[in-house]
Length: 414
Ligand code: NIG
Ligand code: FE
Image 1 (cartoon, rainbow, N blue to C red):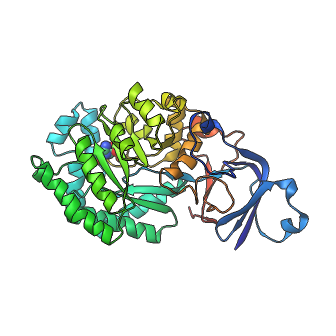
Image 2 (tube, helix red, strand yellow):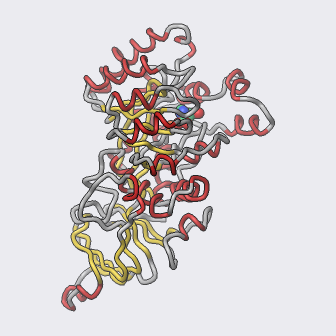
Image 3 (tube, rainbow, N blue to C red):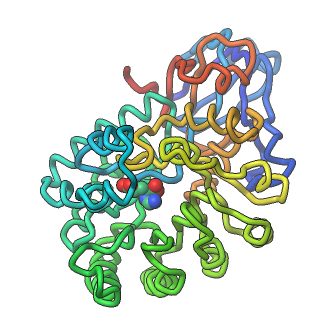
């Protein structure tokens, strides 16, 4: 099927060349005013200025008039925990009442709370819940998404989560990557027996994951009180033998050594980065590893935001993601992520949009098919409501400025 979109007020994120953006390049968002976009079988076939279209081309296509609308690539959300059994709003209220993280954990809260609920929920039910969330984030402009396991913490639970993600991949029109996060926290039974749990991950989880092709990446929560850099290295090296590249939870609560180990392992990305110093920033900037910032998690946990400006100015390649999960970011709204990045982390709107599209695609190794308006890439597009300027997206935080979302050349239903 051929679709021609005409009279686009601005077509944004148009690129001939696909490259990971760092430093000053992150602020460059190439746009074409008064543009057309041609889609063939869900793939971008051509684009350019309206006056380059001939009369014959204009007359006979399945035509969409996008007057007043900006069109940009759909969001590439490269870090989420979208499969979970239940919200944790009870903990949220406890926190408001003044309970500390430790007190909440002592009441059975936190990741272990989510794991208990997940292990008691069927695969079918988890799928239904995740499917609904996926539809919701697609309405908000997300076209590609990474989803982690990590609320199973048992062989059956982790495999169940990954099978749900596999089914989502097969049935959804979003592009999905799966990450194995069995090393999210130590389950109670292994609190004093770390080696026992690491053995379980390597010998009983990774073997099945590899056999059933259930994951694209491995992730570890490298943090004081969770997994040490040495433990992280052992798990990631074992996963590498099964073909899984690394994405890490690093430097969320402390200078945990996560960035150092991520760079050493040539990780695709190190994610969170609330706690960074000059040394870790320099190390990251001299590496191929992407720093993925999750501002809504910092906001929800009331932690200092990630030092986005310092990271960008030092030349680090950064991406933005939602961290959608029931504990630290119960929202998968990438528009809010972008608004917070501009308002609280002083990113320019162009920087935030690039970090949430092309650099997000790189953080999922999807840069050849997504993240920009380029010939040959999937037509995953956001159509804005009538706006005068792209800065209105972060400026109007909390307001929905998305009119329609197209995935693989077709509008998704409301
Ligand atoms: O990315 N930090 C580790 N994992 C999640 C939160 C997990 C939870 O609280 O359920 C995160 O913030
Ligand atoms: Fe996370």
